[in-house]
Length: 314
Image 1: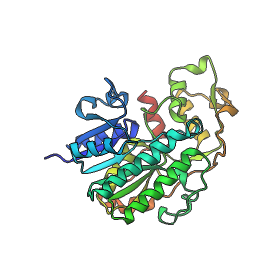
Image 2: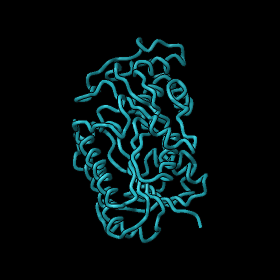
Image 3: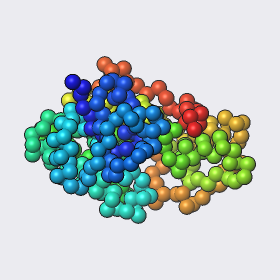
Image 4: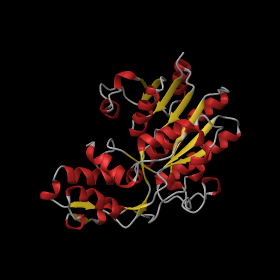
């Protein structure tokens, strides 16, 4: 019989993970708050008809228990969660419910029913303060500076707590997981769309602080690592490119596709500046590469190669 994988969320990471798992002949189930005719991320990848969509209310333990009893999954990937820092200020309750409370409900059920199902919680690299200097095993949690970071930090501690209670739970820590499926309001996708659609002929690109350093990884590569992680003993691992890049350098590479100088086509708008913005967010992924060595996992798409892939797949 095919092994069963349950993915919580219909987001970008979920779609790419499902695509990868289908190629490995897994039976993939996707949970959603509402059953729809079209799930855009899965539709664009041509896999909507190849997975099973199930309605789930993360805040109702009984709803989770029913799903678990129905399919008895081998692995659960919890990719749900309101993921915008800006939106977390507008709706902090949804942020804590989706990122923390739903996760807690799953882990509690796994513990109480003594299930051996593996559980992977996606988390954000924004919760750490020194990953560029030290490996994850010696990292320090940052002081929460938004409802989003607060919720993610609570979830990270929660998974560690349940792991000590013998629940097979993992944390996959993602930084910026990029792809052409990302919404147009995300930095790289926004700039690529602006240049490719010739919007520079009419307007200027309004953006925030471009003197920031970030790690941009290729989403399809990162989710493969998260899958290979489940072949290890329960642990925490970082999934990113391991390469730091200035946002201004990203802009330069995108505009040069049409031989343009980005400085002539952008407008720095304070509206896009984030409260308590951290200037440099990068990470060391050597620990992940070593642990996944037998799977030959190592990021190959980043920098210019990443921006070109997004641009040409729009």
